[in-house]
Image (tube, rainbow, N blue to C red; front, side, top):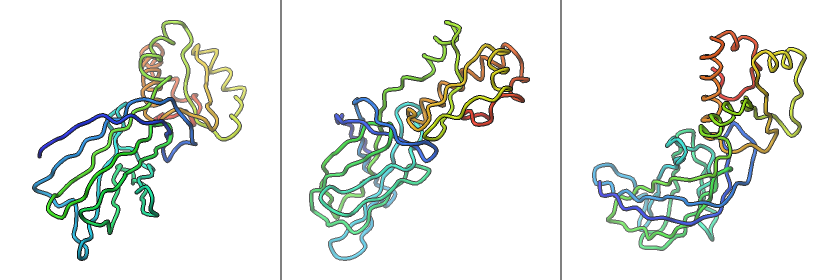
Amino acid sequence: CVLLGFLVLGGGLGATSLYCKHIMMRNLIFIFFVIVFGDKVFTQTRDNSIDLSGIVFSTVNNKPIGDCYVFIKGSSLGEITDGEGNFLIKNLEANHKYTISVSAMSYDDFDTSIVLTENNNLKLIIRLNTNCTFNAYSATEDIKNGKPKLLIVGSIAPIANSDSDNDFEIKYGIKYYDFGCTPPAYACIEEYNKIIFNYLTDKFGSDWKYSVRKDVCFLE
C-alpha cells in the first residue's frame, strides 16, 4: 500500500450505538487515504459508476466507531457505519469531485473533497478525534485526590441510587456518576472506568463486583 496522510480541521459531534448524543469541543481530525493495489475497494457497478468504501476509527483507542453518518454533500447519498466502522456508498460517478462528510456523536466531524477515478482502487480511512474530559489520566488524578467515580450513561433523567448503592459508595469510597443523556465519547468512558476497575480490584479484591450497580459502563 501507499499511505498518504493529511490533517483536516473540523468541528465536533460524537456518539456510539450505546449512548445518547453529545456535542463536544472542536479538535483535529486525521484522515488518511490508502491506495490499495491488491484488494478491490472501488467496484465498477455500471458504466461510469463507482462504489466508495472506507472505515472510521477513534484516535482515543484506535477502535472502529459504529453509527457514524458518512454522506456526500449536496446529495441524498449516505450510509451509517456498522459496528466495525465500515461504510459503503454505491453508484458514484467516476472522474467527479465529491465532498465527503462524516458525523459521529461526541467526535469532531469533518468534510474533505476527493475525485474518484476508474483506474484507482482507493480506500478511505478516517480517524476522528474528541476531547476526553474523562480518560485514563483524569481517572488516575481522581484516585489521587480521593474522588474516584464509576461512570454511568442513563436516560434523560439520571437514575437515583438505591440504599444499597449508597452503602456501596461509603464502603468503597467511590461515587457513581451518571451522565444522563449527555455523555462524552464511548472510548473516553471506557478509558476512565477501566482505571477505576483496576483500582478497586487492587485495593479490595473482586468482592466489589458483586454489589456494584450493573449499569456501570464496561463492567464485565
